[in-house]
Image (cartoon, rainbow, N blue to C red; front, side, top):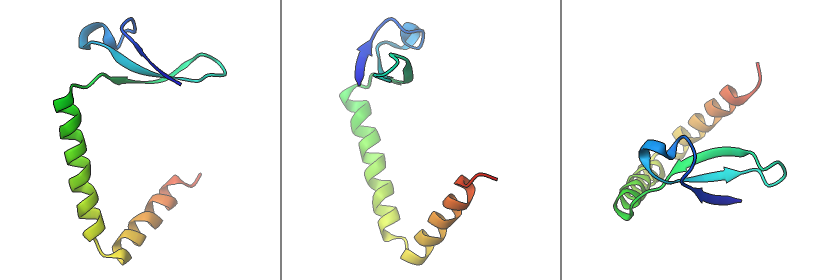
Length: 76
């Protein structure tokens, strides 16, 4: 469940935020700043460029990166 809030500490200096709330406990699990249309467009453009670069990366390299991430994510 997400909702907007203008009362959290994170928003005091930067404007409204979106809060991700655990519906079972009502606890805020994360906050995200409100973005203007221009800010959001810039973020989406950056993500699209990164996706294009990743798509052009050879599959063997992508597999090696994914395997390394899996290694790092496993408990020690």
